[in-house]
Image (cartoon, rainbow, N blue to C red; front, side, top):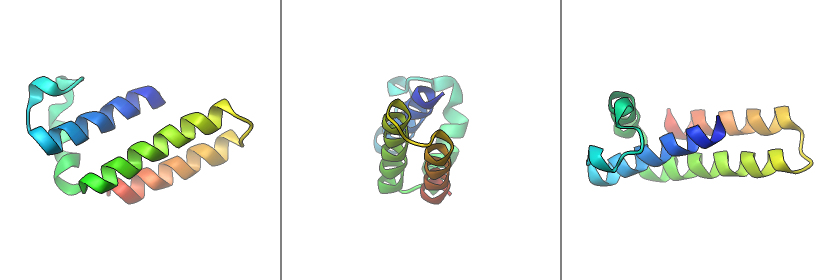
Length: 81
């Protein structure tokens, strides 16, 4: 799920910088990607991506799973809202 979320955030960043649907990993979700890309700042998308990567790293280590996921979700909400 987190890898899919990472790919989705990557597509948002690609759309923001290129507006080229051919470069998207999942062009079927272009409507959703475009909607988020319009309201999110590129730096916020980058921070959201970092939050997901940090969560993946934490889940592989000895960190409270629930706390790590909640922290990531709060970061996503803050950065993409």
